Every structure is written in C-alpha cells, then in structure tokens.
Length: 82
Image 1: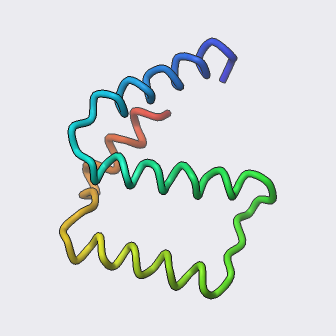
Image 2: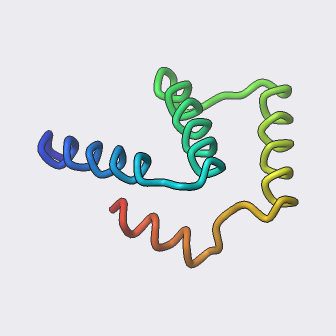
C-alpha cells in the first residue's frame, strides 16, 4: 500500500466512524483500535491469562446480547479492506 492509498484508507475510516449512529459500534471500534495499538510493538500479540479471560468475557457478552457479524458481513468487510 502506498502513502496515498494509506491516507485514503484513513480518511474513509474516519468518515465511517463519524457517520455511525450506533454507540455500540463506536465502542467496539474503540476497543479494537486500542487492542491493535497494543499489538503493534511486539508481534505476535501475547496476552496474559487474565487478559485472555477478559477478552473472552467481552466476546461472550457481545454474543449473548446478539452483537456481532454474520459470516457474510465479515466476508464483505474483509473484501472491502483488501
């Protein structure tokens, strides 16, 4: 990815976030972004047992509340990123 494509991707992401009307989506994006920042320093990401348990609790809570993506939605998002 060249710098022009990178800047366009950042702008598109910012527009999508600013146009979102769903606070749950914004919160999930914020958490994902923070997790991604933590993982950039020393790939692959390494978590303590407590961090893994916390991530599983959050994921379980999302699943129980019906939040998440279908396989088709996830495929579309991944295709759009590529």
